[in-house]
Image 1 (cartoon, rainbow, N blue to C red):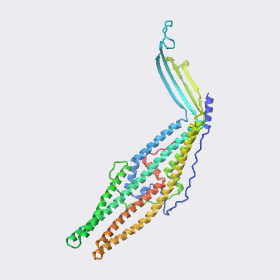
Image 2 (image 1 turned 90 degrees about the horizontal axis):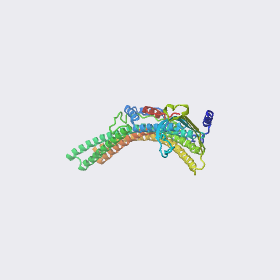
Image 3 (image 1 turned 135 degrees about the vertical axis):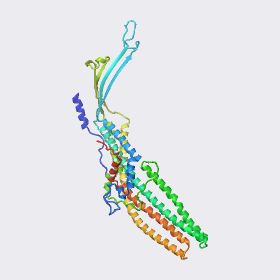
Image 4 (image 1 turned 135 degrees about the horizontal axis):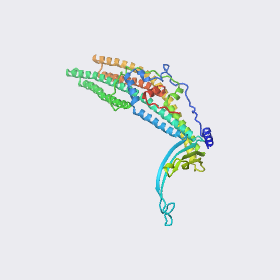
Length: 479
């Protein structure tokens, strides 16, 4: 019997696994980016947010990585799939159990083994039984069904782990983007308040000049309109700031509330442009790695489905003792045992198995195209990020020059009005142009920072591993 078990074990270990073995699909990878940056640096594997040189931002990202609820949910999901993997993998090994019991029963005097009749002496209708045993079972994985299922379960773990890292990637970039947006809104609010103060001074001056009959009431109304328009924008920016603070608070795992500031947007350092080849994305981006693990799992599930065409063999064994007397339970006469090796094979299933195989192949095709789609999206996002930061730099340069020109325009318009060469409408128009130009310039500043943040997100890189370490919740899938 031992030789038979050893032989079956050897067959199981040497048995083939039905279904296709995974091979990474060919991906049409660009040789270079369509928009290159000559000043790009190898910084994709560093904690890039530290390049802003703002300790408050660094602290906010640390807090988010430790307290964000999405990160905690993702970590718990990895643990869930780890448990499922262990459950699936356990089927590869023998299962051993222990049982024991004691029972006492009474049989019917009429329908019992010996009916109670007048001609039959009284019999004992009470029975006591004691038993203790070990049982074992093992399904011989001749066709690789259990190995394929384990392969799929392990890929599911790794996919969930990459999904968790995608959450971390999104979290870090979201905190940085929200903080930049907050500083951008602060600057726009500051510009608006300074502008409103300037308009208020002009309005007060025109009211005084109107009282002395120097200017008309129409000019007073014009200056008041300009002032009130600027004042109306202040609560809009204050509302946007409060909402941005609330959104950032949730990212930090907190209730809505105020957010501390470090540097202003003018004081922030611009991060360097990260360098990398398109082929690097296949290993740098967690969403691409997640898509590939999904493909591996779907590929393995084809083998699980196909294995149902073949017979399954299980070994079962039981050894123990049974007795009606507890004192004689563990004696030779009380020994019981059994061995069995049932074989089950499908003969006619009305297409049930072929339907499962067809379904598994269709799922594999879906995940294949999803993998290819994710890679193409990654290439597009990086190219978009490169062109965004390049063109925004050019835009920012022009906007700076425009604002300088508009300041000259305001100064000259005021001189022309003071000398009586033009009406105050020209001064109002010049002031509004300068105000709008300063707001546009501030928005472009924020857009450039956000473009670089998006570029780091699009390229992925070793910084995700560093951020993962900071969460203290990273989980490794075991072989």
